[in-house]
Length: 97
Image 1 (cartoon, one colour):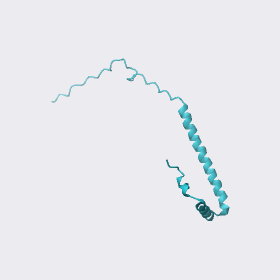
Image 2: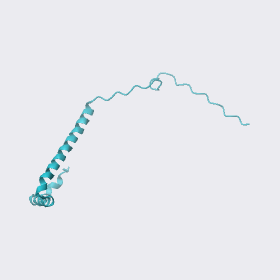
Image 3: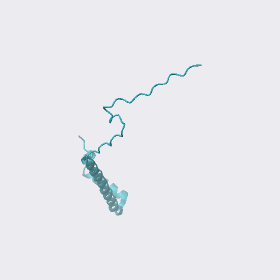
């Protein structure tokens, strides 16, 4: 079974340090706190939305299923013991003149 973070297993101290230096060079020291704050807000929103969906699914599974609506009068299910409806008589073919 593979972990979703399996790619991190091959990263050691030197690799992580190099990644941090590259990030620092790309964004600068002044932008890093703003970047981390934005990532934190995004993660919080994602977790909140995921827990909301999870709670909705749990609630839906705990509810009793809705009972089907009654069939209108005259349907086959309600006339189970009744004889079949009469068939309309067929018309003879038109006479050829």
